[in-house]
Length: 257
Ligand code: HXC
Image: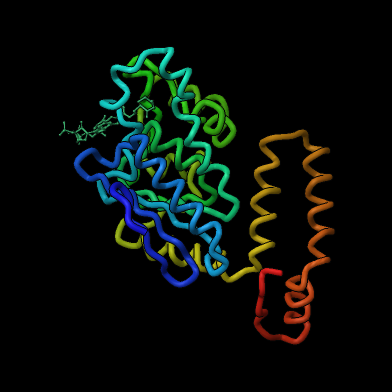
């Protein structure tokens, strides 16, 4: 795959997407988002890939949507093109996505992180939704996903002031799964993604669906979804293999079936 604004690579059973627009701190323009969508489609369809890592650079994961690209837009244009709607493709990825974040994850960059499943942050990471400082507001899910991720009081604090949180505060708040020294970030992300990829593919995909359902529905409906999904896994060969391997005291060999 050849792209202009991202780099892709397969490491073991993990598909890597590295945002690569260093001159603009990885600001996300429409072309970059389309390229991310293209790479996710390829990794999503590849049966050998169990998990995707999305990362940026040391200085910035992504410093937001491209302000220069958006500055002259009019309301009718944003409405008619449904500006930012195409970003949803990241949240719709069915395989788990690990975000590996160093440096700035601001605005749209933070919103992309919020669409990922596991978030590994370098101790240099800084998160924020500073749209309020430039006369707009989060438009790619920030007000909704941040409120669900870290609660109303913190979400209001960040959205209304536009301030940044460091990695430690982000971890305390529940935005981040783990914080590691910056030098360990990529290795840690690969280890987490490989651990996910080693599991049954069908299993990790339905677990992702079930956890995400918690943000979409009532508790009773979510519990019913979980129970039925759990029961359905007994129709898979990987359930037989996983439990047989436990009983036989050996490692399971999952086939994603
Ligand atoms: C376009 C950006 C950018 C962005 C940085 N750059 N962020 N270009 N869109 N979101 C560019 C700068 O213009 C500059 O290019 C280069 O990247 C380096 O940035 P500097 O500002 O010189 O670096 P520094 O002084 O280290 O400051 C880093 C920073 C700052 C604190 C991250 O760049 C910043 O505040 N960026 C904007 C953050 C932001 O507001 N994000 C939310 C965007 S709105 P040149 O060519 O000048 O050297 C959003 C959703 C709304 O995401 C949708 C509408 C767009």
